[in-house]
Length: 169
Ligand SMILES: [Zn+2]
Ligand SMILES: [Zn+2]
Image 1 (tube, helix red, strand yellow):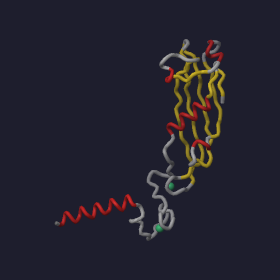
Image 2 (tube, rainbow, N blue to C red):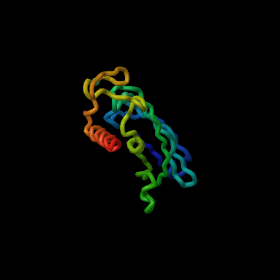
Image 3 (spheres, protein in one colour):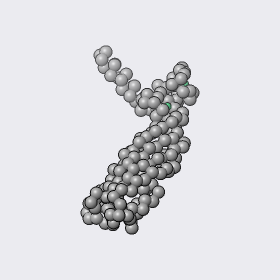
Image 4 (cartoon, rainbow, N blue to C red):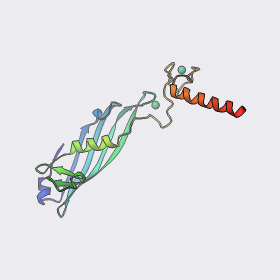
């Protein structure tokens, strides 16, 4: 979505509202499908240009622990200052317009990638899959011995064992 803000920049109008939809599936490998709904407005406050609104991502994500797919809905606030051309050394604070135009899809994508969770979980305490038999530990219990599977946990448990031995001496 390219926003044409030329009339806003020259002051013909004070507000340019926007609402559009972009695909969001490519934002993360863990999203099997996603749409991004964007709405808001660009405003000219006596020469001070702002853009505000929100982006809602709705779709289906794959749980990072149990691999189950589940619906996700995330919201991202959009709030920026804009400037035409190079402002000054503060330019990093601004979205820069090119000939009065702004690639809003790109702005939204950057915002989402900055705030997106590192991984999606179907629920905060998802138990994941058994690393031995692969069963979903949220719905079944298996009798696999998983204590030695992860070398980090193995190191940790021997540490505790040593600790106990010291207690007895
Ligand atoms: Zn899960
Ligand atoms: Zn198992």
